[in-house]
Amino acid sequence: MKTAIIGLDGGTYRIIDNYREDLPTLDRLMADGYHSILDSTQPPTTSVAWPSFATGQNPAKYGMFDFMGRFPETLNFYINDARKKGFDFFWEHMDEPIGLGSVPLIPYHNTDGFFVQGSLARINEDQIVSPISLKEIIPDYYDYRINWQDDTADIVDGVMKRIAAREEFFKHLISTFDIPLYFLMFNAIDHIQHHFWAYMHESHPAHEDSSFGAAILDAYKRFDEALENILACFDERVNVVIASDHGFKPCHTELNINALLNQKGYLEYDVGTSTAVLTDAYDFLKNHISADTLEFLIPSSVKSAAKDQMPRNDRIMDAINWTETSAYSFGVMPNIYLNLVGREKYGQVSQAAYDQICDELTEMFLDVTDPKTGKNVFKNVYQRDDIYHGPYIEQAPDLVLETTTGFYCSGNLGTQIFTRKTGPMPNSGVHEREGILIANGPDIATSDGRAERNGIADVAPTLLHLLGYPIPENMDGTVILGLDTSDRTPAYTDHKKSEKKHVESRVLTLKQLGRI
View (tube, rainbow, N blue to C red):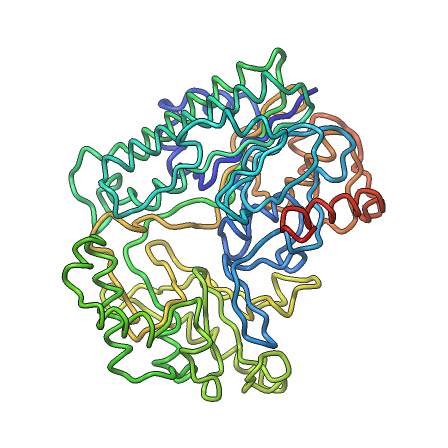
């Protein structure tokens, strides 16, 4: 029995539930199969969630907590790269050929089927594929990237072309490769939701009447059509699993974590106040006018002061006075790191004071309210040891913040705490934890309505169990028993790869990195 995993980056029931009659394929798969909320990682972002989906593990076992990472002992910051890690993906415990079509962050694998490298895993501009002949037939727009400063109509056109290009290519892969497992990824939905949410929802403060009000729904409808056509390519009924790495929610206000920490005395900048204010102004303009207009209006000397004297995330080490700082944030997720003695290069918080500072910060964040509306900004504050365990625990954030609906956090540098979304783009929609899991097929049970919540790490062991393989003991997720029609008891096994597979994996990784 063949299985097709369809990744829908950013897929959310906030859209699907309200428009099921416009999405006949998803509606049919849900009505005749299994569907549940799929809780993402904390934080719920692509670079953290898809590795959890693929490994069945929590982030401290694969070492990714944001798009950026850091080495605390040196305070060197870097862009996360899955190829540098030593963890296993669920398909590495299978002895059958598989196909991977653009799964984010997944490095090259000799799958004996096909491989098309996904986003956030590249070492150059070339698309890495196997077999190499696939490179000649990848359609235009397959890897189209959205720039929110583009013309709005061009963005919508690009999204539709991108979905169509992936449909075309994935249909070719299915008809060409006769293999038991296909993992195919659509990610244009995520991008259009970031930028067009306010167009769709009249209750959004930045809503404006526009022909683009249907853009998000139209993208879902186009995906639904592509899904139907892809499934029609199989010569037999297959088990299909549709999953998202996170959901989506509206955003009307952004909170700068470092600015708040600075105001509360937990962080000090290593630059003058005038430069920090200048940076705030530059960031505001950059988010509200086009790049060409910004180039015309802002002298190069001002841009230099704003960008160089007050560095952004890639030069955060130069921007903070570490000897006067006890907590900080970086990257694009709401993560808090304590400047801990014995762990951080310039540690100031003693081990004895660690729990006290965590408790202080937790109370502080939970008390933060929006000065405009009086609403609490944060829904939850998670402490590290409550949500993470594994070999990369010392690289994990000490606190992870979860915002209430309407709010988003950044780890930018500057002094302006709150920024209002005055227009639909960018980021009038942002990630939330509640994603989607929809499954249908000969081996899939039918749920009576929406099943109980599942965790994103539950999918990998469930797929192995569904395919008849034992589950590695180091997986944190558990088998979703209500999804499977068999009455087999899940079997577990030692998680270690065979020595041969381990050597093959390392050699392929080193080749991709250009080291051999």
